[in-house]
Figure 1 (cartoon, each protein chain N blue to C red):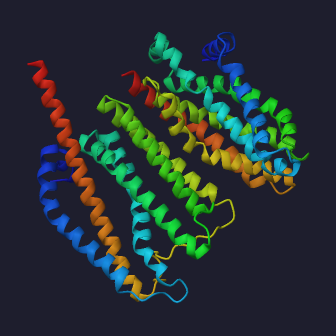
Figure 2: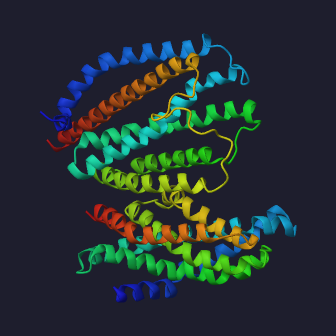
Amino acid sequence: MSIWKYANPKQFMQTSAWALRWLVPLTAVLMVLGLVWGFFFTPPELRQGSTVKIIFLHVPSAMIGINAWLMMLVASLIWFIRRHHVSALAARAAAPIGATMTLIALITGAIWGEPMWGTWWAWDPRLTSFLILFLFYLGYMALWAAIEEPDTAADLTSVLCLVGSVFALLSRYAVNFWNQGLHQGPSLTVAQKQHVADAYWYPLMICIAGFIAFFVTLVLLRTRTEIRARRLQALLARERMG
Amino acid sequence: MIALFLRDLRLAIRAGGGFGLGLGFFLIVVVLVPLGVGPEGRTLSLIAPGILWVAALLACLLSLDRIFALDHEDGSLDLLATAPIPLEGVVTMKALAHWVTTGLPLTLASPVLALLMNLPGPGYPWLMLSLALGTPALSVIGTFGAALTVGLKRGGLLLSLLVLPLYVPTLIFGAELVKRGAAGQAVATPFLLLAGITAGAAALLPFASAAALRVNLR
């Protein structure tokens, strides 16, 4: 028994069907609980008032936006080294979700920034690097869409994902070169004790867990769709042959 | 490898297109900016480093799809791939030829255009130095983009979507180097980082480009 048995599409379909039966209700419960708690049952903050509640969308979507790219990087590496088709399809499935999450983080950030900083947008290092990440997602998806032959597309996009990761990281440090901008440092770190008051901390953690479950659910669903689309193509091709 | 380099140079110069076109484009963009922004000297000298770098970058982008497209059409790319020299070497030579026909003329022409943009006096040597140092990275990164899109029918637009985000760090450090040089500040950090990007890209990206080419020629 190893993790590689899930590289078999049939095995993957069975396991993911079973997992989705639990993941879908889990996502629903966590997201409803976290967001309703966050939006309606937290006190308004002293200086920020009720605008602080946008944190429950902003922080989780930003985390997923970055980690979706990391997941694509791992999946691309697995495709590149071991050539498991499910892995390539999972990377393809994750890209639009990551792009959407990045966009949500940018938009909620703008909505939050307007009352707090007095501006919708500033060329702050964090904001800029997120915008660049979004452009990387666009390029990655465009390359998938442009190439017809599926294996070629998988190969080329994984090369792009590897190179893009290095350059996205470089850009992150390059924009740091400008002065430290408006955005605060990280409030949530593994190493330090929490910076967020308990009243926001618990619903925020539930929201993050909900977004992670949401991401996993969507990736599994989309990967299943991709596998089915691939099977359909194979069936059509066989029919034309025979 | 040297023969390949000379062949590419000769093709670029004699077959028209790429060689003068990039330079002309560079000129046009830099001329258009004051027409749009207005002729005020102070504003122009403030934005000169950034505009000159963005224009050089766009001019570089313009000729990227020619790196492999013609060789792919007439089949000589397949011959190059089966030739005894490694594909990584082919890619490096192609990038070098692209730089000599685009980056180098841009660097040499930049002081004249900086004059039009009212760049402050101390900025001139730093502008040339930063372009000389940064445009090889643009060529190498661009070659990678061209290798990814070589088989596609309408790859031009996709190529710019893929390559422009990759150009971000080079652009930031290049423009920063000129800006600091023109203002008389310390330039060591952006200088070293720009050199580092060029060296790293030139050392590592040919492998990625060659891998992409092999996939496309399969």
